Image (cartoon, rainbow, N blue to C red; front, side, top):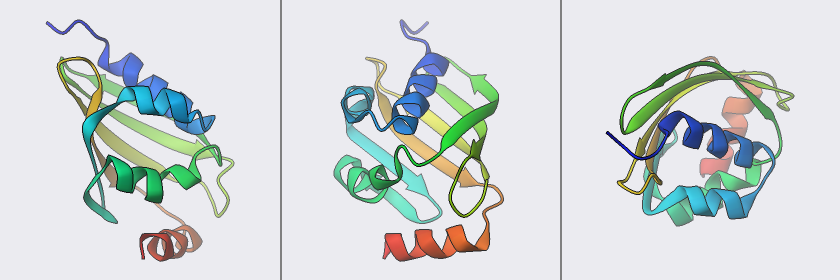
Length: 124
């Protein structure tokens, strides 16, 4: 059994991203953190801060479902107040033995066309 609560850590991640609290995010991510989405293929921590962090604080998350295991959690969420429209995604978080986020895999749900275009430009 793990000594940490994967669901609580995922919730802290979303709260820190939503409020653009970089110090909190830094503490949550493992040094070897990797992020994968349809636009990102296992990018490292530095690339995540370069590509994804600029969107922090620009919208809110509402968790719809949280499925937690011993060392991973899947969160289905919907956004609110997002410029370009609301969307729904699922993210799978995996953790290291110290309870830091080792990886996140994002599975896109519905995305409005303007958001897809903006994300593609940002991914370059």
